[in-house]
Amino acid sequence: MAQPIDIGDDDFEGVVIKAGKPVLVDFWAPWCGPCFVIAPIVEELAGEYAGRVAFVRLNVDENPKMASRYNIMGIPTLLLFKDGKPFQQVVGVRPKQELKKTLDAAL
Image (cartoon, rainbow, N blue to C red; front, side):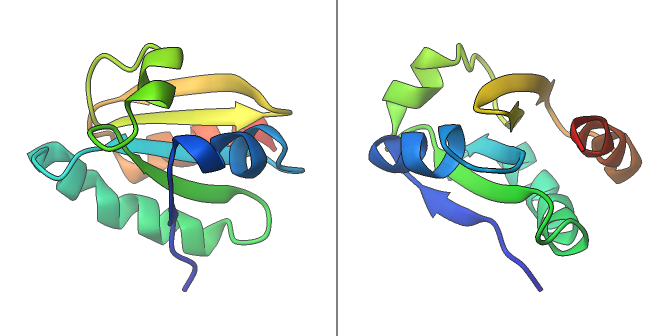
């Protein structure tokens, strides 16, 4: 099963902006309870969309630069990038079906 990969501020440009496919970035922190609620859903989606959408995680405590650049005010925030630009943002825990609709809109 595909798993989201952990990235940092320094990896962001190469992994997200220059990706040749949509990328879902999970902005999270270790102290965030809801982040642990949505993580298994994101992992399931990573498996279902393997090869079509890349999935990455960015710890906002360790990587504040990208969180600030994209105005991440609450976590968990899932920010979907398409063609290197933010395409759609989802804040908080959402049902898997809603997240699938977001991903399908980018494909």
